[in-house]
Each structure stands twice: as C-alpha cells, then as structure tokens.
Length: 338
Image (cartoon, rainbow, N blue to C red):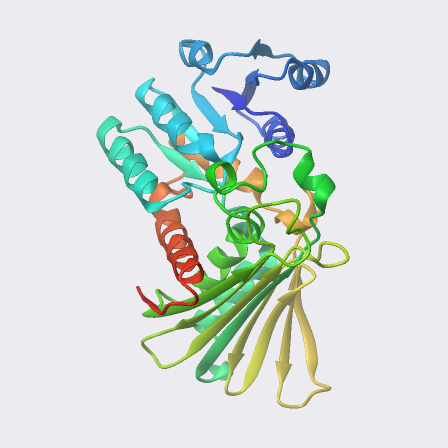
C-alpha cells in the first residue's frame, strides 16, 4: 500500500483526498499546507500527519507519493523537489507556466526516474471517451470536417479575491485559458491532432479592475488535413456550464454537452443520446468526473497492477500549445506555426 501526501488543501486538495479514501490500496498519510486552518479542516475529517513545511514533509520516508495541489507558480519547483527527494508525483494543472519551466521539469523527470502523473481528468469522462472511439472507428460518420470547443463558466471578483495568487500573470500564469479551460483545450487536441498553426486573441471584459489576466480567450487552429478547429472560452457567463465539444463530419455531428454525448444527422429531428458521464464522483461535474480514475490508474501502475497512466509526456502537447496560444494573443493575434 502506498502512502500519499496532499500538498495544498484549498479547492482541489479535498477532491484528491476524497478520491484517495474511496480507493483500495492507497493510504492518505499526510497533508501539507502553510495554512493551519486548512490543516485543521483536513485532520478533522481524516487521520493524517500534518505538515506546514514542504521540505520537512519531503524528508518523511513514509511518504511514497506527493499530490501537488498548490497555486500554479509552485507546481514546477515543488514537483522537481519531490522527484529529487525520491517521491512519485500526482500533478494538478497547469503543468508549467511557460515552456522554459516545462523543459526544466522534463529534464528533472528524465534525470531522477520518478513517475509524474498529470491530472487531465476529463480524458476519463465516459461520454467523451465514447466520442473519441466513434471518431476513430465509426466509418458511417464520413469525412471529418472540423471541430468546435466552448466553455462558459462564471468567475467573479469574489473568486479572485479569495487568494492573492489568482488573477496575476506571475503567479497564475494567465486566466481563463490556463486555469479553467486548459482541460477543454486538452480534449479538443485529443479530438483533432497537432495543429500546423494557430491564431489567438484574449481580452478582459468584466474584471478589468480586479485582475491582470484574461477572462475571455479564443483561437483558430489549422491542420494539415485541411480542416480547422475553433475554440472560445469565457469566465463571464451567468453560471458554470459543462464543457462543450462538437465534431462535424460529412454525414453526422457528434456533440458532447451537459456531460452527455449526442449524435445528429442531416435531419435536424434525428438526434440520439449515445451515452452520459457518471457525475457521481469527487468534485464538481464541470470539473470532469475522472479524478478518482486518474489517481487509481497511477497507483495501480506503481503497484505493477496495470501498464498505463497519464504521464508527463501525455501533457506535453497541450501545455506547449497553450503557451503558443498565449504568445499569439500577446502579439495581437500573430499566426504561430506549431
């Protein structure tokens, strides 16, 4: 049985804790947070060792796996420190705030030989997995014509005011793209391929006086097979809606919306429900339902019980493309060759 230590018990740390405690062969051994109030919340619910100092926690030989659930700017350094200390890591998004840090992380990962599991939990959503399967195998759909991805969430001033690191370029790394919709970007790229080029723009429409970063982002991706994908996300909607991904083919449309996969043909009345996600899982439905499955796969891999998990390599394309999108947007929509 592996002992886990969650570092950061804010918004997402408790989701990891709940998932761990619902799984066999994993022990929630410790929680580390500089905020003692958050540690008290964790200790009231779980029988844990409490740490306020990350460096001290890394010296605990009882800890096998570190879950990095801290503010964005700490992810790379904490992950590198953890693997240097001989710990395997579950890393929340974003993997890195820029490509320089991404390469530093990959260098350390290759050097020290420990495993890093990335939390792209939406890959495990049942309806989304079915969409990918149908795109690959259902020849009746016809030629693939293009894709569209949309996110409409709500993040107000109160959300950003709850933590000093939010809403700032140096500590959050961006806004709606890097924080809320990087998962949607990952899903879109899984549905398509590596784009040959991209053009992006961003803006801050409602929260100009509250944040430095963007609350709206859009992009167009062009691909070698002569099709395009469009991407539009906002944090200014009335409430948060589950991710929307649409794949268009010459004979039909596959639409993932409201955690359900739909199929439409050319007849507008011809709509069928293919399958739905199981939203009875730790976290919010709009976050994706796969946290527990990602964690389970990783620990089973570490125990030699399966042969795959979401690796750092799996996150490379999405993270690299995200950074190129910011580069384009910061340069007035410059076309970036990928």
